[in-house]
Length: 305
Image (cartoon, rainbow, N blue to C red; front, side):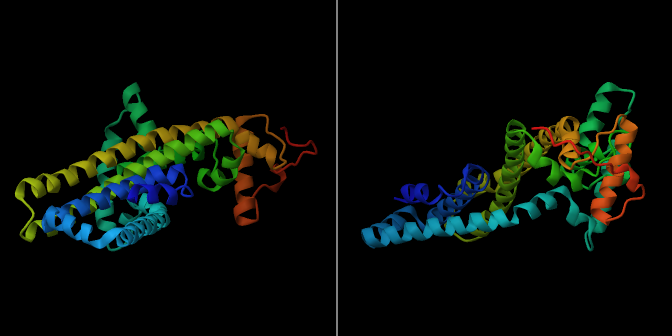
């Protein structure tokens, strides 16, 4: 009964939300329910369930499905903030800024140990860290994401404000690349949700372990497995962020000039001229005034495509 109600109620959620939020949330609440049933006694739970009757059982199932969907929708609203939290932005604000500085210092030591003359070290710095130490974040995930954001922004590459121009570039990407980006982003978010729910499962298990009724062979492995699963899920999220970052880099490499064409601008002939154009365009769109407005030359030719 519960499965059929859930199947009919989640068609409008979309495949991405089902995999990213619904399934981890269902596992989380099912685990809590199993612990509570063990604490109370499965036989007593079965007796009370049978005593409800068909109509009340249907109402209980409908309420459980509704509660799960509300939880998923709330989690969806909190998901962008959750990702930024794992990136370490909250550690840069008071009263956690001291802890954030410790995290940045730790990654700075790792950044300095990587030698640019060593191909393996260069590859690690390229994928794991932003090019400038001032852009380092307190967490591994934050540095992996910042490395992708800094790729196109590097003055020695394109000089594009990647964060500002990404929403304008993304709609111009081909469907295959957007699909790959969506899948990589969904994988990253799913692992972060799994890490969070695994960590949240620990205090619930600890609270039930204090009360009599939950056997030691059940709550102790559950209590130990929560942090381990959370750490593994976070590391998997970092790996997913590395893959996502490579797709973001390739999007700027192959389609950045399509954005210039879509905006009606004449394409520059050299990389140096392109860097200057991106700087002037960013200033004009963001500040409404460019230092070199003469670089913004429009073409009368219609966009390709």
